[in-house]
Image (cartoon, rainbow, N blue to C red; front, side):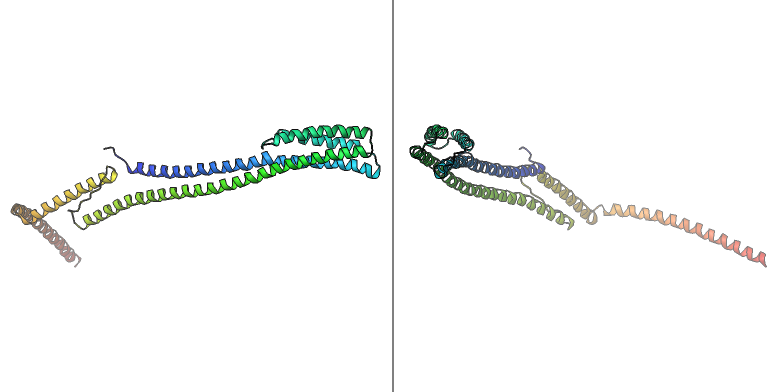
Length: 306
């Protein structure tokens, strides 16, 4: 059976948690990018079209106001101002034609372009040779038709913005529900893994601690039984081997104190004790002789001093 080390278990545990974190990060980035794409589409596809329609409406209104002022005040129209507004209108129209996204928007843009070209030619003719009522009525009708088409263009894109905004809200809600589900599932998996991982080590450390206490209390018959094929199993084998040797030595000491070899050991002890007594007696005699010599020297010194 292949051995699974504790170090490998720790590494696998760390990798497992990193995988969960990476999974949540990827899912979060995916949903955020999708929502960002939807909001960017609303901005690019529809909001800009609303702005283009508004700008064209303002340019058209300015031109119509300039022509109306001519009939009200009999003041000659400002040709430079009108030509500038016509150029701005044409610029916004070209931008709108390059931003067609909704159904029917292309036909409406073509109709606006056709009407604008006719209106443009009529305005230039009017600037060159202003005529009273009949020309003013014609230009006013062209203005109203163009303005109505621009309102329709704006409404199409505003409705699309509303629909896409609601779709983005639904997507955001679904993403929130899915992320909550995935996060809860990952939390439960991580919790179960942590509990199992902690229980595995806590149980074995407690058994090892209890076994050491038993050995200290001279309970050499205690044994550890760790299932598996990791370092804890090896520790249990070594522990049991140590406990077995301690038990054997304890039994031998008991037999020695109670059994037959006592006599041999007692004779040897007596012989050794006799040798020690002889040596101690010899040392004692030498010490007595040394003390006698010291005393004789002391007596002779006292007599000389007298």
